[in-house]
Image 1 (cartoon, helix red, strand yellow):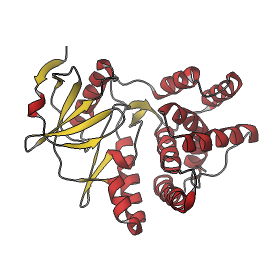
Image 2 (tube, one colour):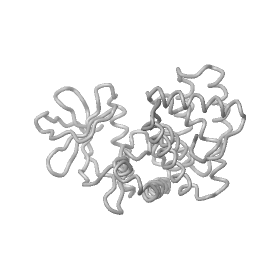
Image 3 (cartoon, helix red, strand yellow):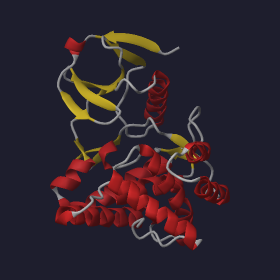
Length: 289
């Protein structure tokens, strides 16, 4: 049974990150608490703890984590990680847009490193999770879901199941100099690395879509350029990997719709899913567009 520890609100320092499902607080000089919001079930917190401990022990560059779930006075649950003096890769892309090629290479190389590790005992299987997401989707008609399930059944793994991050994007990578660390393994699973790449590519290409205006146009095109550089580095021109990527892409686009994303991103994804399904074949991985 996972150990539980109480943590008073007065022990928390400054909030250094706030996201949809969690906040991160400094705790002393060398630790941070990832405090999950009230809607996150404790079994999901336990899953992330087990995964974080296993992948860190396996040698993946991740922050060390205490083997306990922390409970606050307000009934929220959290995990205690070592503090790493580094910058989120997403911030580096924003601050140094002309370094896009360098950071895209670093990002792709780190993703490849994650995929070097064999499947981790106890993690869910990627294909089963994708099937469940499609079946439970409220965003797509029954006919579209049936087509997607048929595509999923037709997908063949590129290799034996490997560790997949499940939500690998620049905000989940810390960088200091030439070193990089992987964060937020709550969605980790065992499966096909190329399916994991298709998930990342979908996030990179669509997450920064804005509805209108010059700023939106620039943001969208910068994101898709970054995505093309990431794919070029990871796939490295291997035709077999590119074909496998194309097969997985529409599946991951559909899965992305279930993430509670912005309207502009959702509309763009729905349009592209319908176009790809109606065409009966996918286009080249030139930016998941």
